[in-house]
Length: 386
Image (tube, rainbow, N blue to C red; front, side, top):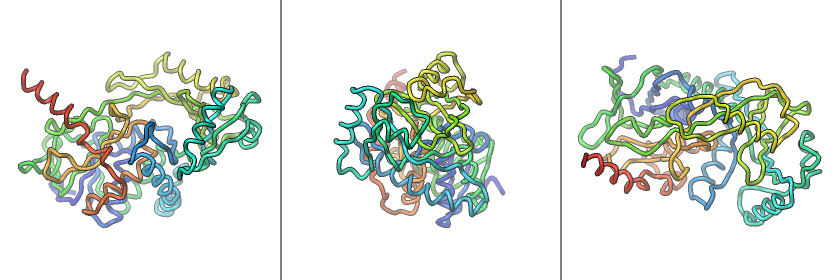
């Protein structure tokens, strides 16, 4: 492939979101290139715990619930679709998410939450401790109650990302690994391609799915997207197995299973810049999550420990759609923080809508770039005054 080839769409970023966008765009017949600064799927998607399913955002949000609900349905389809196309399984499974209550205060909390969600289209129910233990025999005897979200699932994010990238390539997506984008190509205020050192690619539309690095690809399109560092460990699972993702009411952390019998314990949130490290403090936090959520695991063998960089924003929401600083040819698709896997397929479908010049199937007003306009202009004014 010539590096001066003309594409209809260039997707920057080979994580789960970028690969899913490329896959769906190519499925619609678009000529697509996918570029990444390194190998496919080795950043946030490689580190993700892969928890998916419908969820709500604190305080409400017009994007979050529809995106997570739609993504779960799309994953149900992709699980079989990708196997048929590639012969590879993505490690999708689970029987729901259980939020555990070990005392009266926590039990009241989940009961109140379910009552507040009454009539919501995200199914939720309250279980007694005994009922929860029937579903998960490894849960401790002192469990008082649990909130069940039956639509919760888990996904091996590493397998998923590599599999959908393979499926996209089979469909005809051109994938360039080790091709770091150093800036965008502009014609006046419109973006017409990307450049990398001495090479360039031309396109009608560029999609920024570059994760934690997305806000810094071009100085004209800076956004305050920052790396949220997370540490996760994998343990040998309980003797009875685990089929639900577990967390504890009003406390951070989760335990989620894998189809091979492992369980993942996560995750920390640290602001330490663009470095990936394993720290004693991080290990202590993960151990405390294990003790609080599923004490049976505290002496199970540690199989692996890793860290990654989530693309985060100050308000905890992604950045999706066009940018007011361009006249066209550019779309954002990053900043999903811990919920990237939960929202990847829906994000991809909305991006396909924009590229196809259709109305986005989920409202993006609350996740659009305009919410950063004031802070970006303030920063730009400061830089000009230096």
